[in-house]
Amino acid sequence: MKKILVIGGSSGIGKEIVEILSKDNLVISTSRNDLNETNENITHLKYNVLEDELNPDLLPEQIDGFVYCPGTINLRPFRSLKLETFRADLELNLIGAIKTLQIILPKLQQSPSSSVVFYSTVAVKTGMPFHSSVSSSKSALEGL
Image 1 (cartoon, rainbow, N blue to C red):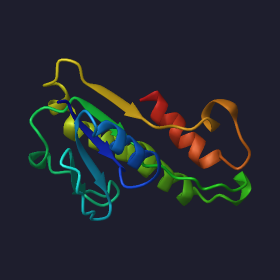
Image 2: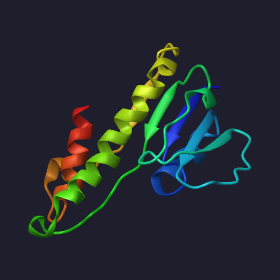
Image 3: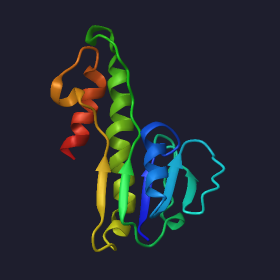
Image 4: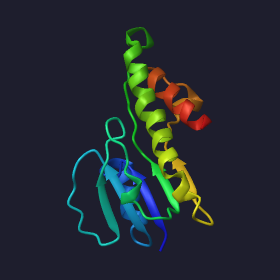
């Protein structure tokens, strides 16, 4: 079975990904909250990308897939967004992904066919009202 690391696997899209992938893979799911996981193919680690350092010793030697699901949705007109909002969105959407990928890259390189998935938003390509902060940080993520 492949070993897949999912960051932000406790709710929404991340939770669904964990459930689907755990049918045929071993999944290491992280979230900022402790969870009691009962599926034998799912291991949960508490990891808040904004506050914690991911301990690579808690992960398998080889990781075959990495899915980064955290995101923000600060929907406001551009004129009412503060610089701090842009910074916070960049920290979670981009810097958190970079930080985690740098930690696990050696483990991904152990796999003959590893893959990485970052979740973005359609607002990057289409331009949507009130999406300035999230679309700019997710656009940077797409550039990664």
